[in-house]
Image 1: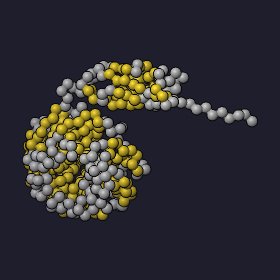
Image 2: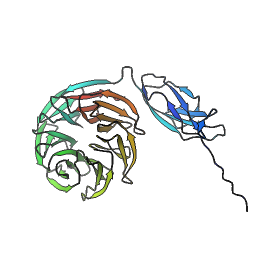
Image 3: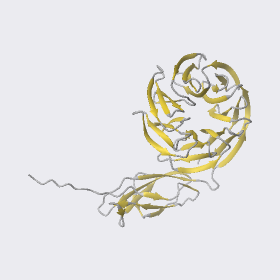
Image 4: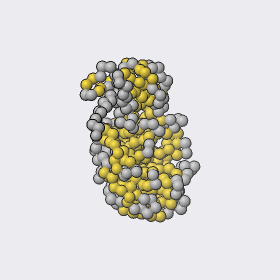
Length: 379
């Protein structure tokens, strides 16, 4: 019988990267540190590289000239025995001198929601009963459509912008070719959240007042189905073959669009007014909580929570990073989706609510002002 020997291999810790995540310096400097066996490692070496998986030897203090734009820095620690740590990935943005420019566009009412359609940015003005059309080339309002009541949520599809009306319990259909209302469809109490389903030519409407979701046929404008979904809803999103409906009670409900049956009710951050389908997950902000929840659609469970400030509302994804509005702080933040680190932030108008990435810019609906804030170009 041979004696059993247990060998314990200690590898270096994943490196900590010190240095700017966003900067106008095209030759930023980064410092790497790692530990081994609970104490600082004096002889640990580092491998690193920008924008490529193959790493090369790097000093603990490293600098490299970078082009304007986004980059990924990868760093790995290696101890004297040759054992390697996990690779740390850090997103870095090199900004043009002066940074992106902020513009405030007057829209004459409380801007609640935004949507990109027919080469324009459309704005729901809660206090003026109108929907306005902004030309992104000139930043001018080029059309105003009277819908009455309190326009709230927007979606776009089938040559139209669809407007949920908080006061009139209806959805207005606006033709983007004529800038006119072509139909008004009665739905449930306080229809706030809307989503267009291109696969089925349908508009989904989440009602805040009577805890329901409604399906509208985008061809006939008829209400085809309706079901009660517990909670008070301000948003509805489509993805992974399902509807995703956040509720102010702190849950995200997954609904089968074919049967309108509830597939899962998932606890998320407090008061999730907005949801987003992006990067293989479903994300919710938390207005009274302090985190962005990432829901895995494979398990119907929260897989991670990104730390954040209280007061988050709208969230958008530009293909790499998040843009989030903080209603309480009157700010727009640029976040790393891997860890929630703030890459940059800007002051908006009062009460930023909805966020849209379109036309090379980030657009914010300032719900307690008469403006839309435009940040361009996107870093």
